[in-house]
Image (cartoon, rainbow, N blue to C red; front, side, top):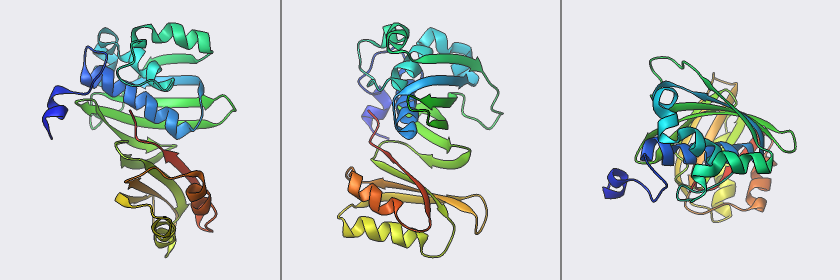
Length: 221
């Protein structure tokens, strides 16, 4: 942790965890969906549900779903802009259990072309976030780096094929984690890179025989 984690990011306040972190969570969910959001059901747990409205958490989450940064001066008017752009949203309070972070949120999203995605994560302080679930698959990443998410068959060589392609294309992997539901079933790779990957890199990974799907998430502002 450094001084900027303590002070918090450049942002529209009042709270780094309830406002800036909420914007970043919305941004992450939009990036995972991969297109502008048309409809959103947003589930608020714990502190987000109890005190979020007073901190502008609801406004911040919607602002993030529209792709705005944490210091966007329009955040207090996010609902008005959402109405203008046709973004429909519903908030509901949820109970994610005692193990869930107090600033936990779920998104059920439909994009403008009809794509759907479910995302869950938490604002963990100082504007930082952790995404913990994508489409029912438990994983973990922060969005601080350009990130590639794969869904692949848990077979020998799957990880090596992906990392080999990225290496040959000059993409350096900063961090990598693999998550799976059960041995030999479906697994997910989270690859955080030192530089953004381009369309040709994603196409090369997508074409591998053991890969089911690939998502690209740029570093979240």
